[in-house]
Image 1 (cartoon, helix red, strand yellow):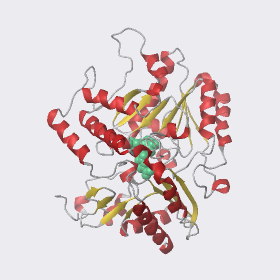
Image 2 (cartoon, helix red, strand yellow):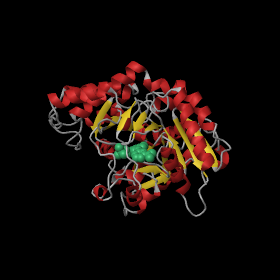
Image 3 (tube, helix red, strand yellow):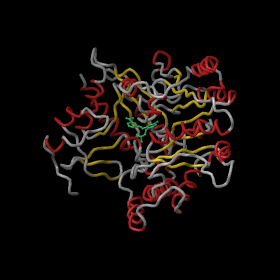
Image 4 (spheres, helix red, strand yellow):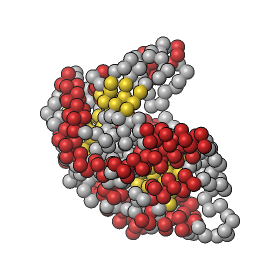
Length: 442
Ligand code: PXG
């Protein structure tokens, strides 16, 4: 490890940090230098328990040698291959591996480099699909309040996170938003899927009757909204969205960047909830976070609609220089192999009960106003400090880091999503440290 143990202020100016309070961070930095299993280490050797799998992505845990070896071997053999009008075997293999986790008729995988690109790709496929079928008037998209679909213009347009929208002008035209499903008055402290709120899906009918189905291309939602604070869909809600979309010929896109690859105890949210969308976006756990990569899985019906016309014609005018990058594919294949061999994509099922007990053990601690859990996701919602939204959450995050625990906060909601290799002793530690932090919090 050659990274310096500390950086001075000048050395930190060049890196404009993403989604970070740069001045605050650079005045008091939190650096990571090494990772193994369930832990990170700071440059000065402090061990940090990782309760968020990096950023919802290191599902198989840190430092997996199979992945680093596959990546090294691929770089040495062929570091790059052009993806347009050319192919390489690893891309086909990874597409088959990914398809193996999905419903049988959803086996067409388009590779991207991130979740944001996956979302933009899925939205573009939706538009082109309707056009290919002679329904070019279907151009509108429907997202949801408090949805997060990455940071591309498509993603922020259908997303419903105010700060991702307010700074960036008018975005994509023709987008409506469903109401979010977060209802503390009715559902606070629910273990698992909340009881109340399925009827919020009926808002989709209202939007359809406003614009007419013939103008609507797709609905996009996260099965469980992650970034905006772990919002778990009410019982029956996703089913209802599915049936309204089907009735009106509207495509349903599940953004599974977070729920994909075992987070809920089933390979994907679609299998966990038993609701099948027309497209699934994914990233993060696809390569265990080791190399940037995303993907969109599309149904046979969508893929087949494109495979018409002259044989020599490019069917979808879309792709990236680094689509199906060989190094990312190598990381992805090694990751899928670990998931299969260790049964990791259903392991959250085995741990979910113990995890839920841990989450709900925090009930009654100061400032806690809700606790939520599903699979290996947990959230603690804190009462905001008067006039200072987000400060209490941030303080909890900083103190937990000082005590050796990595969390994620969004506003005053603490989110947790540990690597799927987590053991009971780690769960005890997570909630032991977090409980102590909450007790001390002003
Ligand atoms: N869709 C969803 C559902 C996501 O969660 C993206 C798209 C975008 O992925 P990329 O790879 O472009 O970042 C995401 C990303 C958080 C957090 O704090 C979550 C994400 C990114 C950054 C922070 O919860 N998810």
